[in-house]
Amino acid sequence: MSEHPFDAPRVAIHRVYTRRGDRGETSLAGGQPVPKDHARIEAYGSVDELNCFLGAARASLAEMMERQPPIAPLAPILLRVQHELFNLGSILATLPEDVRPKQARITDAEVARLEKEIDAMNEGLLPLRSFALPGGSRLNAELHVCRAVCRRAERACVALARAESVPPEAVRYLNRLSDAFFVWSRWASHAARAPETLWEPNQSASGLADG
Image 1 (cartoon, helix red, strand yellow):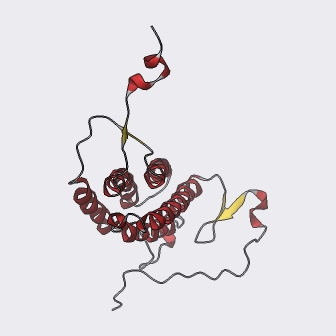
Image 2 (image 1 turned 90 degrees about the vertical axis):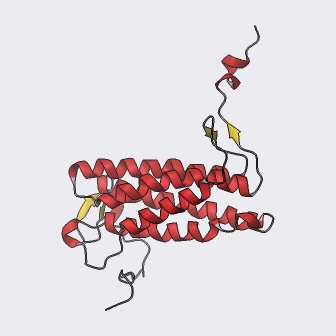
Image 3 (image 1 turned 120 degrees about the vertical axis):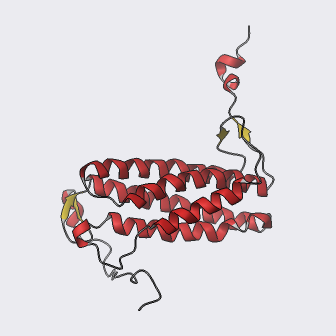
């Protein structure tokens, strides 16, 4: 029995373009042609977009680690999540009847790991008395972007699940991951001693207006 739960990638990329998408169609992992605006494409496309933004956040983290070593524990977590997002994309790009026994996917283990990390990193943070605004550092803002894109990916998966079969772990994972990005954004600011800006309704133009 193999020690690894998932098969290695079955990918061979020789040509980047195929011209098959020029008519607005693409293919799922099982070879089925679908329109590029199909709900399944929207779901795993949003996951792919999230992975790209997460890569940008990892790059910012790597730069900050030279000046702020305390934020280093976040680096392996973000890298692991990038691999998990590709696993998620794999299962979303595959119709249920085409899923292989050891195909990469999201399981309850990934959800449980996120919950453990959320609890551990949230423990040392001050309770919030208002909503936190993105900013204070580039990394904080980029993790908030990841949070928002993650919510969109979650919505896309929920929409897909209304019409087709979607593993319930996929939606649970994205739901928990968005919460994790929020906590990670706060933790990163705390570890780097960067300021945290809270929402103040009266800092709007209406609230600051004279008289």
